[in-house]
Length: 234
Image (cartoon, rainbow, N blue to C red; front, top):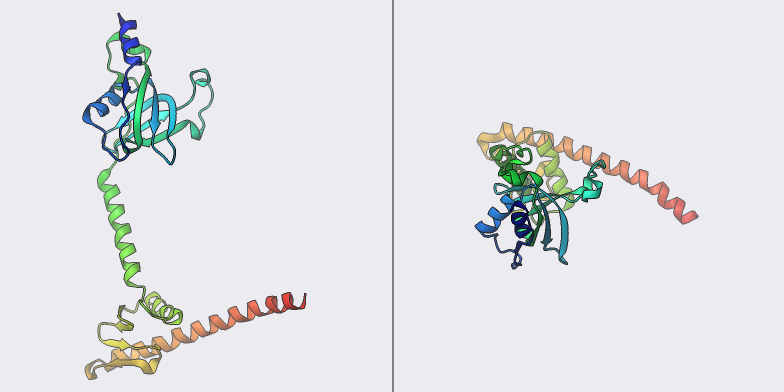
């Protein structure tokens, strides 16, 4: 009788679905019951691809399955990195249960046939994602619109020396009180009468950073010029 159950399970096929359609609850339940058995799964890509192997887990939290595609004849061999496949539910078009694990006939749950996959700290993952998004937004705000390469270099230099600075159109605003207009020279800095001390500080720092940028550009030109002359002479 156990053999009859195994034969009927082996013949079970989940019919194809359109790409991007979420898996139905009964399909996910079927995948969970098939953990530990061998399945054949068709996945959506630029061209449909079919993989066959042992279903290691079906995780409804991450919406993925893990498939060990080593053949039964090579089970004794050391696993390779390409033997395992993590497949999102969203890419599964269909799957067929080829065989159940031997221990299913004893009445135990298939889900318990393999060690449980460790729980993912979703809170920590979300925190890392939020931090990355904040960093990308800050980088976007630090990029001037319609400014020259030299102007952006000056902004980045002031940012590196911890001058609180932001863009307002094509003007830079330092300390929320000093406006630096193109072409961003010390004499292009303006501030109100009660912010003269801050204005003087910004001008001094700007002068120093501008000098450093000019010296760096000169060194780069000197380093590239001999190579260019050598190619012309050759």
